[in-house]
Length: 191
Image (cartoon, helix red, strand yellow):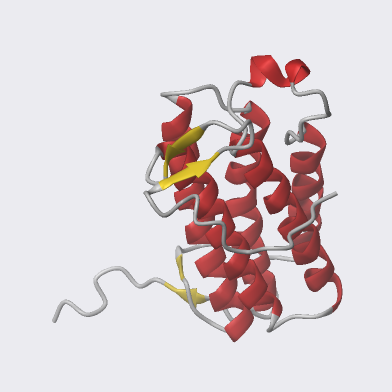
């Protein structure tokens, strides 16, 4: 259980922060940058939820919870030492990605195939979901970069990859099931 009685601790005033295993690192370290971007993504999902309700809101709520799981996973290095923690270490699992895939498949079944690239536009919800998609891609790139330097849970990377796909498809659903998609017209403004 998390108990936060005091929000500021002053322990980060010198530019360092604590990871999930207690190690202190620079706030600009790649690991902190990766899970910080996941936190940013979670906030963009919160903004998107202002424009939704029903099933999409329920799915976005689950995604927000998953993103906290993902942040907890990324802030804990040394996966091979999880057994030494003295408590169960929270890691992303393939079932979380499988749920996203099932939701993507259900949404895609309602859409006509794309015949053009689409612009990140349309309804307010679709536009917010496109912002989520781009932040998810950035979080994925940073996590993949982190994985070139340190051990990272493969399920975390896979989840981020699938999540950006989820946001893309959900944005199309929010655009009147794709009928309101704004299509890219290559070279339309050249003359």
